[in-house]
Image 1 (cartoon, rainbow, N blue to C red):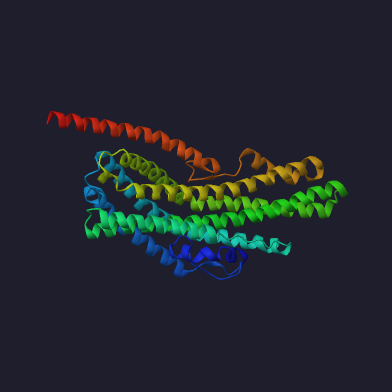
Image 2: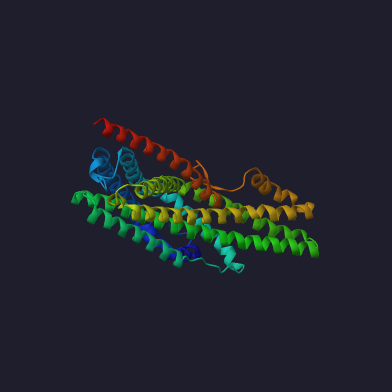
Length: 390
């Protein structure tokens, strides 16, 4: 199965994280979710759920014990760090749970792609996508963030030994899951975009050829109907893929948005701190902001590429529609759906994901930063008044 070869580079780490189920069979008829994959995913998700509840309870009720720089943090910083840590726990846990829940559906999507690949390969499709350099960059970035976090947590903070392990475990799992999920999503979406682009090129060549040579009723109708059927299948597959990944996307973007906002605020707070001792976590803040920004940029780019390619099909079919009345009936249904609703990826329906999403996130981050800075100034002024009265 070509699709399995295309995602082979990222399949194993994705399966080990239970984001992609272990499957059995290597052809369309025998391909299915294996019993090993089903139970492995369930046990791993259960383990994440239990440890998340236990660690989350400790983080929530003993938040003061997780301060990186105890002397530098006020109430605002402590609350923000606690929420960020809880979101970190919830993010990778929900990614695992939602992926295990949709494991059977995920296998069905891969099998549907494999069935279409038989036609595409018979007509000369040989393209493949790999993201080795991107994988090296994201992995290096994740390891860099973890290294910076280890330096601050182990050598500079006053956090107890077993709580240091908790915090590093949380960060490690979040970085692992977000990196693997991003690379898998990028690979599968780009692979789908290549297949749709191949069909679009064939459709464009068909329109050009038929306009020059005239329309042969039987052969032209058969060729056009096959391509439209495949485009409809790809549209169905992409919509299902969005449904499978929707919850994970929501939590990835939710954690990224809050982390970029909170760490940007903490960077501002440490830069404006009076004491040089209070400027200890600026490196960690910058590392988190850079890592999360690149992660969401990669996801947005992949989603936008696939959605744009899928929506291009309607524009090509519209040109064919205007050139011959005998093809209008078969094109009508596809165009009606495409015109009414362009294909777009969403985070479980809460907001759309495309290249403009990154700009919208940073616009929101700027707004919330202003609010947080105002709270910080208010808190500092109250502390100064208390010190003067004291």
